[in-house]
Length: 275
Image: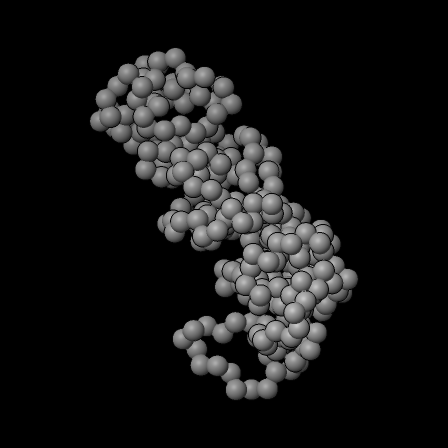
């Protein structure tokens, strides 16, 4: 329902929030208020200085409830779905943030990590950052995405199986193998082995090998059996390193501490898990 025209943008925000909404577009506000674009931009700038309005993307605005004024923005979960609709992009909240939502995080997650099919600039969102990570074929992994309720509606989040595979695929933004192994100590309990195997076909084979190795090492080998069957149904596969080496760094010539024959993973050092 469109709020009735008001005499000021501040009143428009109050009316909007009384209807349970906190997001709107510039065009929507201009139409509701019956003002010019210049007048809207001037009023919006004043409210942004007062920390009652947040502008994460061109033409998209978020009303800041009083309890979040010191943060300069409400939690990203409150508006990420509306933001991505405004961007016109499919998405899901993933990686460490998804793991946290599934109850598998040993540390506070400072970045709100989103996977989408276009390269997007990160957003400073009050005390945190919204970071975007690229995956071209989001449609192929649609079955691994679930709806998660928020205080203002819902948002799309990777399920446990998709989250686990993503953590290996985007290891460089997940904090490295130690952070991934630490998260997996809790996340593995929530993973369905058959669903994991079905989702793994949409990932690079190396992700499945590394994840399978971690499952075995952490004591969840049985849950990885369907994954193993899928990866090795046609026989042995090439060896991979547990930790991918950066492109600009020369390959290590030291002998691995382990060459895991089951998953064909070479381990340069064992992951350290935080208690």
